[in-house]
Length: 306
Image (cartoon, rainbow, N blue to C red; front, side, top):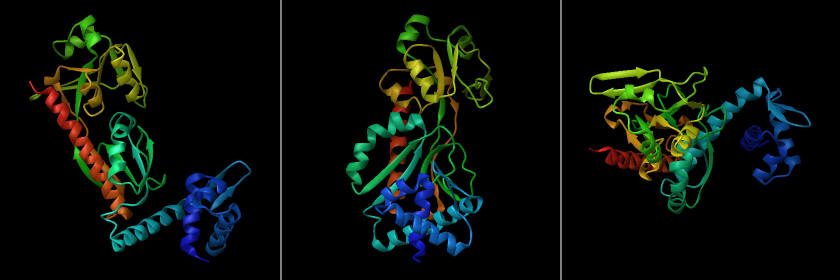
């Protein structure tokens, strides 16, 4: 039995939850994929996968073994990349997770530039506004807001953010511009619904003054992207991280109000599984994402200068 081959097959079946899809992805027959998994289970003396006519799922042993397989295969890939000298030529598949608004507004327009720079690198990108478990979900690298606490991850802090209060030019022309945070109570506000189902408070900071206001919202969403779209359509005033509204500010679809009251937000980091340390493809994406974030931050800073 080629244990590395059977481990790779098992990981792909687990990722795709299907023997047939795994066979297509690996360029093997379904019979060979089934044989690989069966050989691995016999070797280990336990069942790794639940099989039904409709779906494939991990057993408890399978879930634990999957994480160990990922670490082993990541370490092997990193070692191979170093010896091949592929630091100069990133190749292969990279599974990426990014926040929805960053992905659609910032990353997608820049992808042609990334592809031209790294033509042999294939990206698999998923958009999420939740924090994904990189190991359990088979993600190689992610762009994440907030502190990174998981000990099995490596993190590269790229930029800090600020909370900006914004509205469309059309809304401001119709309703006027608020002069201070308290004046927002007289405006139509677009809130963000937290997991508890209540709108998040709005944050303001000017020098040593800090305010945390629970403001009445005309409408609230559990989607950051929906908030931004609603503000662009003139529904009301929104507060969001500067990088979330960067593209809309640059294109003048939104205008920052009360910029002198911008409050400090969460840091943005590029995070990856430790097994990919030194990987050329990881370094390529991390450098590109960091460059993109810093460029947008600089452009937003220029817009906010008095």
